[in-house]
Length: 589
Ligand SMILES: [Zn+2]
Ligand SMILES: [Zn+2]
Image (cartoon, rainbow, N blue to C red; front, top):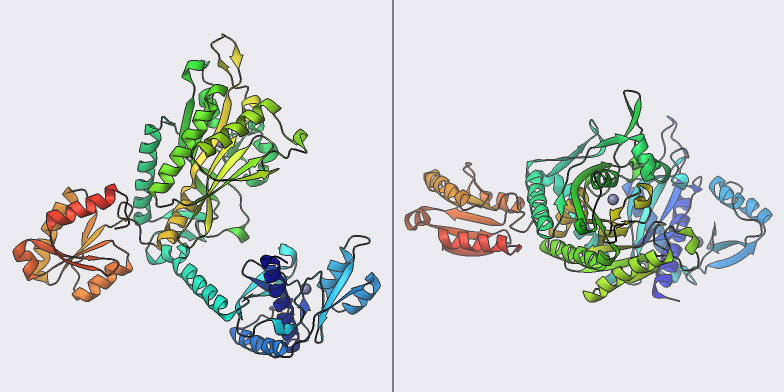
């Protein structure tokens, strides 16, 4: 068995042991399911209702008791025994377990029904399991949290009580995992977003709608300015497009056919239906189609920081990562077939330049292509697909970018490249997508006049580099744990006068540093110096410039970094040079 399969068997076995312990404490509990998941397992229970009708839930104390009972079961080394049974027998065994009965009922005719028993506990289960409970280390598992979860994820069905746990082969691995969890928790962008006063969402304005506070607004402006500047350099033209469009436009583009469940309900304007945009593409095509295009004008690269709205279920909304309205750093490249290779190469180069500037240099790249067995599922002819796929592969090879080829993963209208960036904790985040589209140019009858004087169909590529500004900002916060590199830091330096009599020097310096293009603030509060330093560190401000009698007399500053490093006295000019260099090189400090 593979290592992952062994881990899954261990985790799934531990979930059985947990269910056994829960049943011993709550004999009336009804069992949901208890699968292994990434890094652990869960099990869902229906504990029934209190007398007032409210759901009975687990408490934190229950978790401790459940863990203790699990240890007893582990120490008893009870074997897991598999048995295949008939449907009638299954219905008998699980007669007072309604959720299990539902699962049995939903099984295919002729499907093998198996149960696993250990000790007195029996579960409807396909397995596999470890041989006996003693193979679970009593010091390598932990119950982590309690959550509500609808049976089968369906809001119309009962709310069950879920216990999440984790288990590892050894105690060391458990401890390493718990430490990683703590690190993830510390970096959680929702928590840092609050602590650093970056963004908020409000029940009052609607779930999944992001409010960028001044400091985040500043970071976003810097990101956008950089993005625009690099796009102009790379030969893109920047456009702005409407936020709503007529139903007929979304009909032509195919969105109402393929994408309507992600779109919000239409609004009526003078008897016409309009939809708020889930994508920018149709508007860019309108711009392309305002006149006859000659082959000489191509490639056309239209870019937009376009704000779109897409429906997401409230249950899946998550901070900045999963939202209902976001700004895509979108672009559409419209070109001739002979230009496509260079265009893809250009996209990849811009991707690595821009992502690299934000500190992401480690990628995993997926190339999604057709299912070779089912070419009929895709539109566009063989020659187009081969040329498009070929251009993607060649560009990746020319830049020595390893990639995973995913057959059958392409959408029906074209192949694509997805770039996942690796953050400081090694987690992958999808940002960039370079997506061919053989569908939309047909639907909108896009053409250009070739050198032969005849009309031809151009290639079209949708591409986004950062993905969504909201999500990318969330990734940035977690990657840097809120300590942004100097060029992105909302406040780059805090001036800390030790006593009131040093304030005037601090104000003068502030003006001087602002003049040099730095974002600085004076902390002229009544706090003591140590408290001011601590506050600046909490706010993750890169530089602290402390000034007392000596600094005022010598016209210097005492420089500290947010890493707690004390660099001692510096001339103001020296500090300015250092900060400007860090900004120019997009360094952390
Ligand atoms: Zn099982
Ligand atoms: Zn598009």
